[in-house]
Image (cartoon, rainbow, N blue to C red; front, side, top):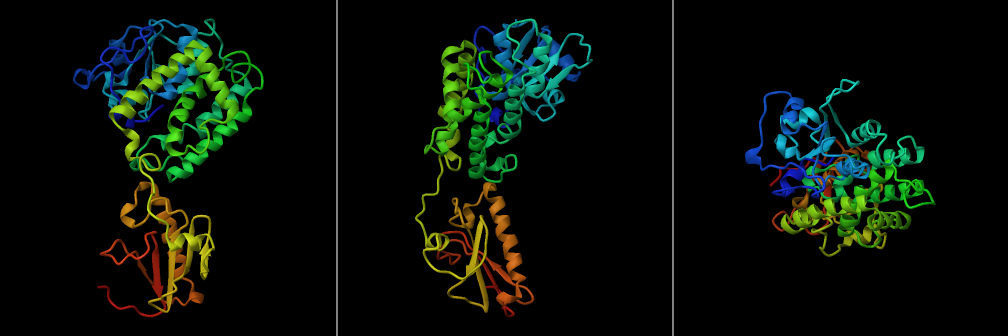
Length: 406
């Protein structure tokens, strides 16, 4: 599912969030019904259909389920699509009773079912339920095809868990296992290439001549990738070549995927981009490090000699050439990434700042560098703070008892 962040950014259409073939019931927040009954009972009041899919057009994970509904031509009586706003939004008690993480999509089962389940969350679970429930209608989507299942699993574990790097503000970091946007985007691009390696070499679809759950899962996420990745890095195409050819084929030749494309893109362009200017304030998209380089760049590149005391892929520590104490070491991030000074730090910098502090503690414990019983850790910031080089650096001072600050 997509994240609660959507609610602040999405214009809910006045009439229909989806095409006229399958209209979503959408209401404004002022007409949202707050119900004290169970969420399943509340959903029943919204529609007398067999199932309700709570979803919005921009949700790429919800689009996986919608692709099944459209390809199988399920009726609104079989599965009605309603906006989560009808229950009060993604973080309302009513919706979270259906989807405990507050993510789209969610499905209520409004008829008796042998499992006894009344509602489901997570798009893969919902998709597989519907494929079993309506197995005799339309394409099967090959739920037991190992190639399809491999692609779906890789997509769900390694793409959707970090897709927020493409649109979330810094305050929502980290995403998945990645503390900063740059590394998350690199991982996203890498895993698109991995998935490309799972594709069949034959046929229009990922697994050959027949549409599969892999197509339904990956295509909507590739809409995000095609639209958003160039905002951060236009040095290479957003999709690897085989995957790009598959994407363009489905968009042009499969009417269902063309419809999914239009649904998602309408919100991305008209609401996220044109109205809310979502990427204007996002680091590496609307905001970039345009400050001039410094002498530290030359030290990192080994163009200028320095007495290096610690180095890894993230940080570099070296002796200050103008020490103010017997032991004086500077620690810098190798990738400045906007950190000209500490006041430029955001949640995206939490990991590198932590690494710098850990390194500082290790260095201050090194008696061979001249440190004794303790050290002083100093970051100068800006003109008033006495900063001379505009690449964040941490001073580790020691080797004698230091006087009071000020």
